[in-house]
Length: 436
Image (cartoon, rainbow, N blue to C red; front, side, top):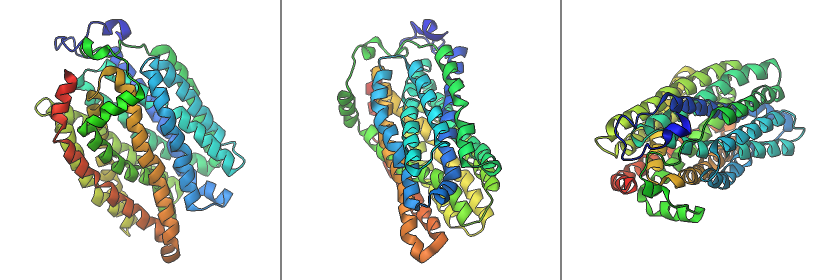
């Protein structure tokens, strides 16, 4: 178990040796729970967005800035140096410190006395959360062999949807019972306890335990990793596809609650229940299905992940548009379930493919570079574009402006299907090269 049991498990191991043990699954589910907490703290901002706007009397563009760039720019830029640390140092320590920082800064958001103070707290949340996913991807890739990796990373990615669901389900009622400040405090502080669980119960496995010894010998700078990734055509196409999908996904995560408040005039608790269940259940089923389908068919064809990603990206567009434009709120909400299911299906297979394209000592850095690009596109651009479009269209469409802003962004995200399809041309050969 743990680091001791990991020794000796290499690319040349027998099939029995390559089966993850019970402790590997403990680590996976603990990191999944960390990701849940990560997205609870991130998503509650969308629940209280309208309340903050009214208190500080600011525009949709300003709120788009607060939900997008104020958080995401520091999240993305901090991610790369933290990942470099993770490729050499203690990943469990890095994750634990990140949890403590983002939880404390989420709680601090509830104490903010001005828009600028809240923006600074959001920066702190972003810096803390940058220490979550890259080290977690690296740990999971060392606990699970390539043939189990898509399922493992899909389970981890399910944390997004469970976290969003719980953020909605708890955030709405707490906000209604108290106020937006109490919501941040109630959902931020418990995460600090989780930091201690991670630090003292996760053991570091041997780095690159499933790969050949030759692939574990070198250390690489960020520039070298980026230069290597630039030569992988599959990676370039995957990033372009993921960026387009992220713009759509983050836009809907940030603005769906406000959209239902304004356009369909729903109550906050009702919205919390609908969006929480639609995002959570759809996302859980989608993430699990994506990983299982990929691992089942990848043994026959290593392009399986990209075929799946391309298909679900295209199928998601009509449901995104339906959610935004349908006049009947029940039909609109019903569209939100398959939209989230399809959005979740490609995430685990996408990250699994990227992790398998690189050498073990590049994995955390590769994950950080990937997240840097996805979050610049999604978390920075997505919320800002919807806020700006909503303000631009408000003169002619009033409260309905946000409806058309979301629809346009949903259509734009669907073009990711094209780039996932292009990745199928090169991914099989490049995965074989990486396996050595």
